[in-house]
Length: 197
Length: 116
Image (cartoon, chains in turn red, yellow):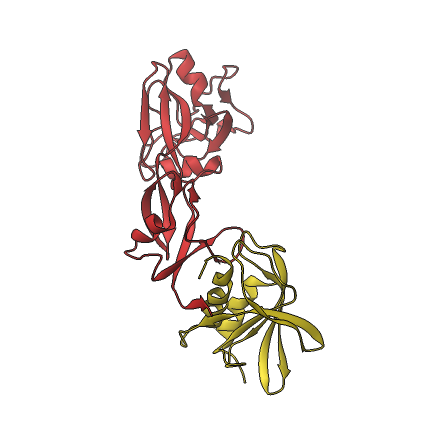
């Protein structure tokens, strides 16, 4: 096997060669070049109009946060989770230097080598996902009635209690008060079985 | 009477401490620090779930205090002594009989969140 040094452009912004052992970098048996640098900051490459090189880790900006991923092809869901957000409530949007924005679906793979990609922003979805009895359902964000939520599973307040699991065990909700939906809420239903006497 | 372990385990998520209190042939489920639905004052109190028929009701939920809730309730039990403590209960009938302990508790807690 022929040893080959991988070029590391020391000193350029966006490239960090910390801990990089050039002597041990070789072309792999398959001919693939192993990651050339430790960390590539995609914003800095995009700002210079350069292609993002292969790296062990990639630094990306999501809103105002800098996060690091160890793959050049993370999914939208993975990136959202890096900033503590979930796909049931938020969407991820690619931002390019030429001001183009593209929504990334949760299971869509992003190519961090994409030319001009400078980072991501998140946005609260208008149509969010809630969970009722363990299954996901789409609903408009905002104040919704108990009847509207129960209708997702073909039930009515006359026949069923709606319970919300929020910072504790599932608790019954008043059927005549609106429920604030932000996305990712967890609900359960139970047959009505009690009444005043 | 032994209650199913999986049901008592599930019930533990609603309170800080769960224990069995046997008195006058009835096995009550004593729930210390029972969480109550939103809008209740206090939001937490002790509870005593009686899953078997008592006083003409198929089941009852006794509480350590007369809880304030958005709806006026008929508190027809005040300061009844069970397990050397005073308990309160409002008139609330749970008709279904095949409920798990948590479903039974929820059916009683619903008394705080609906008018009738």
